[in-house]
Image 1 (tube, helix red, strand yellow):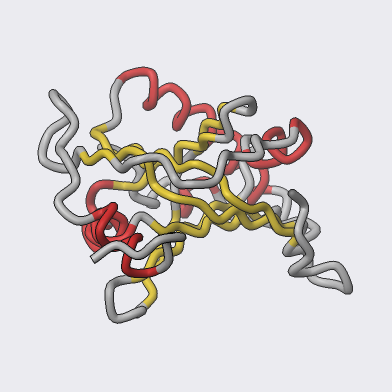
Image 2: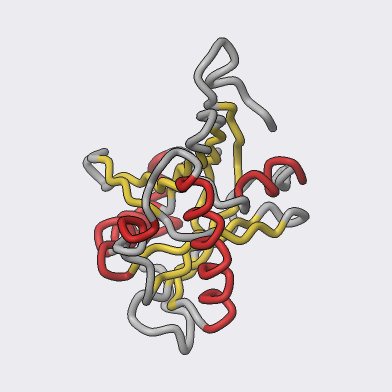
Length: 191
């Protein structure tokens, strides 16, 4: 079932039958570490990610059908290369199912005022219910997100309607980081 060197067959085997992490409810899941070590996350990229920019989480199912939803906050552990994004539980079911199936995730961070964008690709390491500390991270993110979008004329009353709590915390090990700002460097690797 698993061939030497990894690949899609090995990936499916590693993620099949993932364990539910104790005490985190039915959404909890744990995935083994990827074969390659994480490069970490550069300080300037982590600061950008946590600055209230738009966060879109992409996943795919076994048939390669994509799914995308807005995350409402992020926490970055710069040294380990683990990032945690917060998905509104009300709309996270399809993405959580995809991540349980294959663990592959792509997360794009984009600033509305100048379209500076960065995309991280990685492997899911944990899915759990968000707790009080996570909620505090999300509240800080929402304030910064409101400020960012307010600079381009979005009214807070519109933004307040965005689903955010309760949420699911999805942690992933960053494998690659790409520049995605429109222009000649879009798609180039940052790590």
